[in-house]
Picture 1 (cartoon, helix red, strand yellow):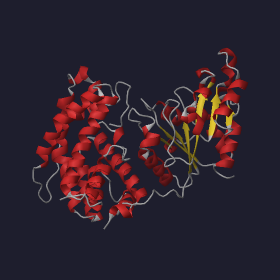
Picture 2 (cartoon, chains in turn green, purple):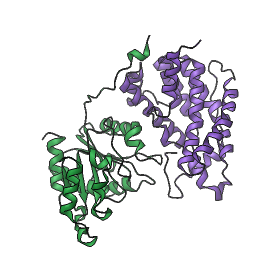
Picture 3 (cartoon, helix red, strand yellow):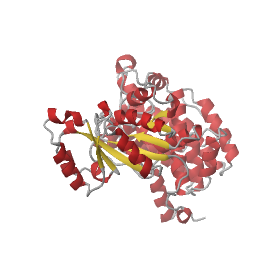
Picture 4 (cartoon, helix red, strand yellow):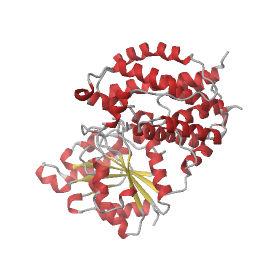
Length: 215
Length: 226
């Protein structure tokens, strides 16, 4: 048997729930975005599950489990082994296994949100793990972030600029940030959100419905 | 003489770049290094030596060899899996081993390694447990990697994953870590020579390490699964 010949490129076709990654720096609002999206999808009749990759504790997973927004059994936590980008990019097997397990336990699940641990602007999701992914930054991190051309920011399917309510307090010009992010992303979509006051969340959910769930 | 093709295949599957989830497990190293006020001074060399001699050599190595010799008899592998489960006292180690095994199976199923899909299905259906040493043994056999090669791959990976965890935890520098690896490799080579009989029992006993694992997360920091 020639094993090397038998090995083929990993199968890309997979029957099951759509898997959407949510990456971004620490504190940008990834968990808050999930907390806001859960009721949106619930209203739309979408069966949901969540995988979190906390960096140091199970804080994010526990926060979502205790939120009362979703059955806690539909939230899985995967440790990142001190390397949040490894578990979503170089070696996503534990996340894949966690998502597969959620699908097996909840056969009706249609959408699995996979939250990365907080990372830097270079973090990207492997398409072995997700079908589509978002990258969340916030205005308080500085309006120069789009100009830094981080791969996470450039390559994601949807860039989310969160905490827009803080813009006047940190001297950020949202129009300029939008323009520069658009240039860095060659016109790929971006959304402004304010998770605290639930602004822009429905638009994000609408985009996932049409581009990921085709509904 | 081993063919170049087979040597390269061994490199591929021994490489930490091969996705298996192993990077997320520290086998108690993180916990021990955090609990020095309760467990005494942490010494990386002592930890590494104990893990290789008192766990890997007498437990994981045995499981790999026995799995390798089962030649993809999936039901017999499931029985061996149950034996690994029964012989691993620490729950975090048992759970970690199963998760790591499932991670490795996930990759092998996707790249089409013989029997990976079937055994992963058995694990999913609750007919097997999927401990990593069992999974390594039968998959590497299916890939036509010799028994000795499989044992050395496992020994190297066990040591390297511990030194890598130590680097990530800031306990040792990346260059110093290579000095620890250089020192442990002859130990791995030596203990690998010990013959393994049919149905050789699995034994592991590192009480301080297992106490540390049971305290994992008590400090509020938990970067690794165990």
